[in-house]
Length: 303
Image 1 (tube, rainbow, N blue to C red):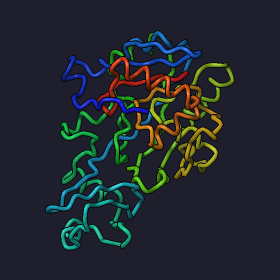
Image 2 (tube, rainbow, N blue to C red; image 1 turned 90 degrees about the horizontal axis):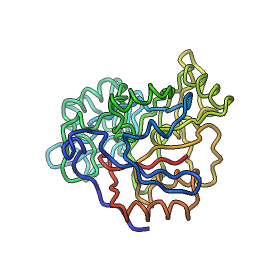
Image 3 (cartoon, rainbow, N blue to C red; image 1 turned 135 degrees about the horizontal axis):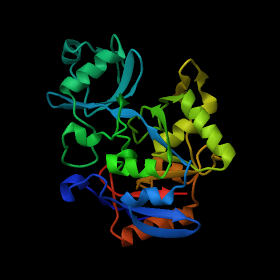
Image 4 (cartoon, rainbow, N blue to C red; image 1 turned 135 degrees about the vertical axis):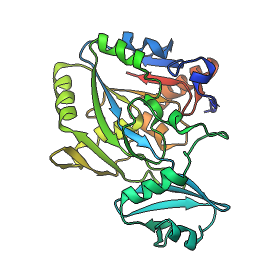
């Protein structure tokens, strides 16, 4: 399966608005080329869109000539990947303690996040890195993701208003994305599903409405509901669920997502929604129409 062209310029710089991307709809064995801004016409009253509230961290730091990419954040430690071992004295000057096995410790998660916001830059899939606000969506509320959960990026205020006028319901989860290292399976990721989201999704399913995840991170969170712990806030924990063609979807009916590399875990997740043949047709159509991948790229909708 050939790759799509990488979108390296944000659509708001190309066309003046962030929502000016294309959307390839896959529904009932049909593929339709649409403008994303028409998304409100595709959903019915009381259908549910689920958004990830996680916000991107500037998770890559240069220490002299050593590039360190932090991921897999926990309360007092996190892992990193690096081009070489970062200088221990430099780490120490920032309150970080090398623990071995490409892991550093710190007093609290707040400390590492303060360090990243002071010194770090966003992990991007392109040569040029844009200002930090380009790597946030209207739903980026809670810092914690090592990579940008970008599927919600085209949802501008006007798009949201049109969805609300169509009486589409909004629900929210938090899942902090880790950086996928090529030699590893997807790392366990922290997720939290509030009680309000659980109730809204349950009522929608009972009434036969569509529950549509915005981004693969929302799929992983929602499908992990049985793996979390019930707390006063909702269901939360660290999910090690890896979704593939063998996974039977229990909560999510559809998905809005970007276009992913065929050898990625994100693409493998799509196989829970569509067969390999169907996805090949989808990507073939996307290529022929000039669709682009990446955080600033176009999207597809699988329902």
